[in-house]
Length: 588
Image 1 (cartoon, one colour):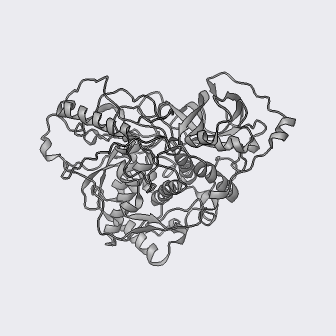
Image 2 (cartoon, helix red, strand yellow; image 1 turned 135 degrees about the vertical axis):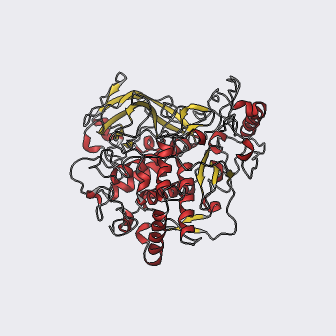
Image 3 (spheres, one colour; image 1 turned 30 degrees about the vertical axis):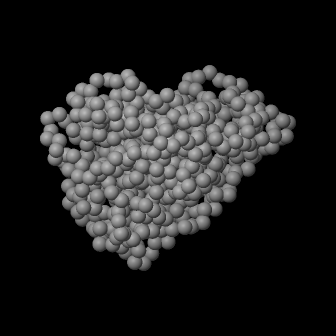
C-alpha cells in the first residue's frame, strides 16, 4: 500500500507475477463446475487518506484510498489480461504488483511432521464446488462467555456439541478429526500458494495469523451449534488475561467429559496459575498475577503499529519464515500458552505444544477464542486494522455446517459482530497495569551502563545474557511523530523451527538474569516458538522479530538518548543466531 508519508510498511510493492483467482485449477479441468456459485466484486472508492486516517466505525470495514483503489485496478487489469492463461504458465511480469495469499486446494498434500509424530492426513475432503462467503442473515447474536463461568445448561450444551462432533465419521468435513486437521494443513506445508506451487502457505508468524484463526473458529462454532440445533451456541473463551481465569479452565479437566484431552501438562492442572512468560524452568509452581497483567499491558495496550500487533506482511509468492515475515505481539503471548499447556512427556509437546496436533484438544479453540477477543480489545483502544489490500484480500477455504466448501477473505472478518458473534464484557485489569522502571535516570547516572556494540552474527547460549548498544536513528521526536510512527526494535534471527524456543528482550538493563521479568519496565518482550517443521533439509529459518519501544523509552527516561542498550536473555531452546539488531519505525 502507498501512503502520503514514509513508513517501513510503505515500501515499494514487491515485484512478482499477478495471481488469477482461478489459478488453483489445472488446465485440464472442466472449470465451469468449479466456479463459485456466488461472486461479488469489492470496489474501493477513491479517497485519499493520510497515515492517521481512521474509520469512524472503528473496524476499517471498507478501507479506501487512491493507493488501494489503484492497486486493485492494476491487479484486476493483470488478472483480466492473464485470464486462464495465468494458470498454464503465465509469464513472469516484472511490472505486476504483489497479490494476496490463497491456498491451492488441488495441490494439498501430506504435512511435514516433526520427529516422533505419527503419520496423519491433514487435507480436507475433495470438493469441486466452492462458494464465496456471505454474511449470515436473521440470526441471533452468539455471545461468547469466559470458560470459568460456563456452567449448567451452557456447559451441558458444550459437552453435547463436542460429543456429537466426535461421533461423526472421520471423512465428514465437520468431524472432530477433520476440524483438528485444518490447523495441521495450514501450518505444516500441506497447502501451497495459488500460482506458486513451490511456495508453502503458513498462517503463523505473519499478518494472516489473526484472520485465519478467526475464520477457523467461526466455522467450528457454527458446526457445533448446528449439531445440537442451537443457533445461539457460542464458544467460551479462556480468560487467561483476568485473575479469575488464570488457570486451565476446570471444564476441560473432567476425564469423563468430551472436553477432556489426555495430552496436557500434568503439572499445570487447576489451581496452578498460568504463567504468560513461562520459561520451562524449575518447579511448575504457577505464574504471578501481577507479572501476567504487566505482560498483557506490554503486549496489547502500548502496541500501536498494526504490523507490530498483527505480524509482518505475507504476500503471494513470499516464502514463509524469512526476514520479511514475523509474529506480532498478540501471537507471541499466544505461543507461550501453547507451550505451557502441552504435555512435556510427548516428543513434541503434543497436543497443544505442537502446531500439527494442537487442534486435537478442545482447549485449543477456547484458547484461540480469547486470542480472537484480544483483536477486538486492541481496536477498542483506538487502534486500526491493516488497510493494505493484500491483507484484506488474503483468502482461506473452510467447510461450513452444511458441508459446503466456502472461500472467505480477511476483509469480511474485521467485525465480529457482523459475523454474528461477540464477547461478554468482563473487566480488563491489565489495561492500566503499566510496569514500573527498576531504576530512574538519576539512579542510572550514578551507575551508568557500560555496554558496547557487539559483532553479529552471534549465537545465544542458555542463561547467558548478551548486551549490545543500538544506535537510534532519531531521538526526542514530537508527540505527533510518535503517534504516527512507532519506534520499533528489529531483531533478525535464525533458529530451528523444530525446537520450542524462548528468549526475552530488555532495554537499558544489563545487570542480572533475575530482572528479566514483565514486572519491570525494562522488559520489552519475548520471542517464543512453538515446535513445528519445514520441508527444507536445513531446519534453520529466519524471521524479523519486532517490538514497539516508543512508550517504553519514554517511561525509562531514555527518549533523549542517542542509543539504547538491548539485552537478550535466552530462556530455553538452542542454536538461536542473532544476525543483527536495529531500530526502525512502523506506521500507526
